[in-house]
Length: 224
Image (cartoon, rainbow, N blue to C red; front, side):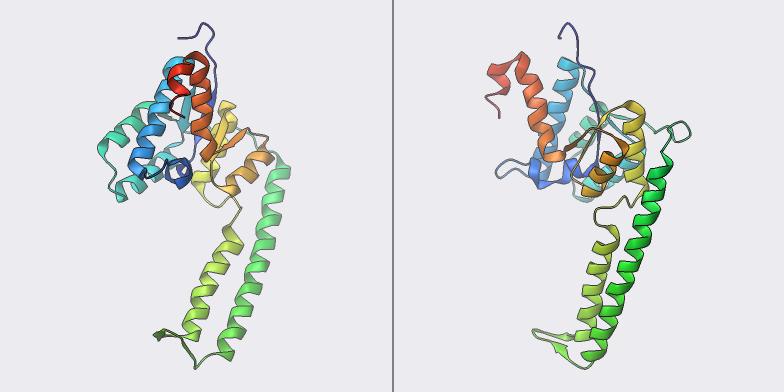
C-alpha cells in the first residue's frame, strides 16, 4: 500500500463493460469484464482508487450481462469492487443555463425529427407499390418506415442525454467530484457542460495499468 494513497474516484457507465474496445485479441465479453474488474480491484487495494455506479446503471448492466449469459463470477466481482451509490438528487445543484440548453436542444431535435418524418412520408408516397429487391415480402413503404425509425432515433437521441441512467451517472459524478468513464458521446457532451472530468471507456484499463505500473512496473508493464 502506498504511503499517501491517491483518492481518485470514477463513476462507470454500462458502455465501459460492453464496448469491444476494451477487449484483447480473441477475447470475449466475459474475459474482458473479468480483466477489467481485476484491474479495478488491484487499483482499489494498491492506490485506493474507487469506482462507483448509481443503482440504475448497476441494474441496467446486470440485466445486460445476464442476457448475454455472463457467469456469476463477473457479477460477484462487480458487486464486490464497484460501489453502488444513489446520487443525491435533492442536494446536487444544476445551473439553470444547462437546463435551458437542454430544452433548446430537444426542441431543435424534435423539429429535425419532424423533417425526417416528412421526407419519409413523401418517399413512401412515391414508392407505394414497389417491392424491395431481394425482399419480396417487404414493400418500399416498409423499407421507408424501417429507415425512418433508424434515422429518427439517431436524430433525436444520438449525442444527447436521453435516460434517467445517464442523468444519475452525471449527478453522482458531480456529487463525488469523480471522473466519468463512458463510451457514450451524449454523456461525454454533458460531462463537459457539467465541468466534469471524463475518460473514454477504452482508455480506462490502460489508465489503471499505468497507475499500477508506477508501483510494480515489472508486473504491470509486462501485461500491457
